[in-house]
Amino acid sequence: MTQSPIQPASNIADALRSIRHVFITNLALDALVGVYEHEKVNPQKIIINIDLTVSEDKLGIDDKLTGVVCYETIVNKIKNIIATGHVNLVETLAEQFAEACLEDYRVIAARVRLEKPEAISEAGSVGIEIERSNPRR
Image (cartoon, rainbow, N blue to C red; front, top):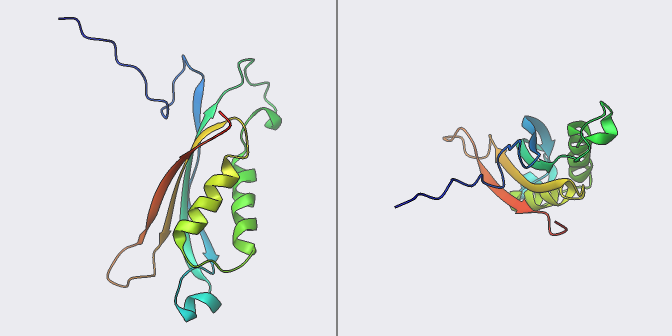
């Protein structure tokens, strides 16, 4: 019996398919997020981790920022979303972050992990992780 070759997953770095990952880890920001009254007026720390599966330009990188998905641009988008004000759910914020990342046509998929490290005193952190794919690809 012949085994079929293992096909690379679409979300891992793959030289043959020109896939790379752009990531941001442990971005700590204050946000107004939560359903309780004190969470609506007192910002709390959130920890954000983002992993973007990115399709490389077939022509390669010309050592210019315009040729890549810029992590600073992603961080600024996240800060702008947080600056718009209170949201009830971390799920809502995570969806907004993923949507902002997927605005770049080169982003195939966005994995967003959002944590509230101070929400439950007995826990190191609580939160969610989502993965969304780009509907334009």
